[in-house]
Image 1 (cartoon, one colour):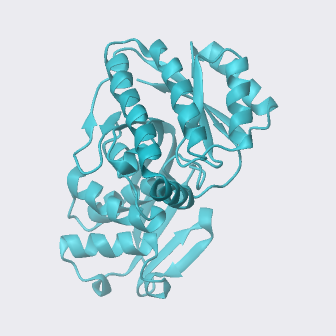
Image 2: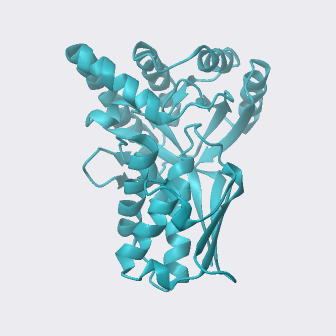
Image 3: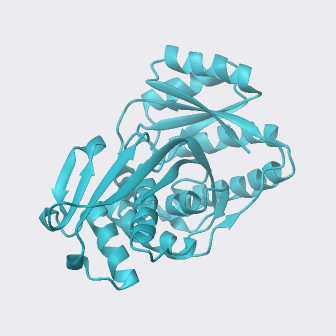
Length: 309
């Protein structure tokens, strides 16, 4: 049994979303995780994830291992004893790890779907989202929940922590260029660093979060009404605030400046920051090619063009 899950990119609201402000994210279907479940010839539940060089029987993994915990969580939810199964779990991914594209959540969602289908106990999207969020805690410490939500439902999502994410439709397709710095930057670390700064100067950071909170609201209205060109200025505003929160980096700023120099309507980092990915808004696919070339010339390791529709 196979199942897939897309990547995701945050358009607005990263970091502030952890503190109860809204965020907006969209799926990125050009990259994905595929999980395949097969009956095994040897006892136990064997996990093969070549992208992270993992080949082990589940009992050999630490109890807090994200992949192992997802598998255990599925068996617990559907009330099937884990030790009654003899399975091989293979996970393949085209999503770079620690790059802001939701690799951890995509692994969890694909794995939950494939495993529950193999066991003939298909779970609802709500159940899948709940299990994937528990795994996100192991990846990120204090996650917002936006990654698992947008990937589970594979639709644009307006999200507020503690509430159900609201999926919405796109009034007019628009094109993004995603530039990869090539710098691995685990979200857990940047989230923890922002929390330390917030504790040190809560009033200042609450003011920043309040300013950021307006952007996803305006952005959602712009996307739904078919006016995505309005997103550019919002991206630039959001990036300036993320710089103030110390989560940008020289590598990210270089790619963002290159994209703007190539005519992008706006550009910002996406995700935890300190590395990983940035995004830029292009007028159309031809313009996106020009922006992608500028990103690569500025040191970007990859440039992915995606249409949000």
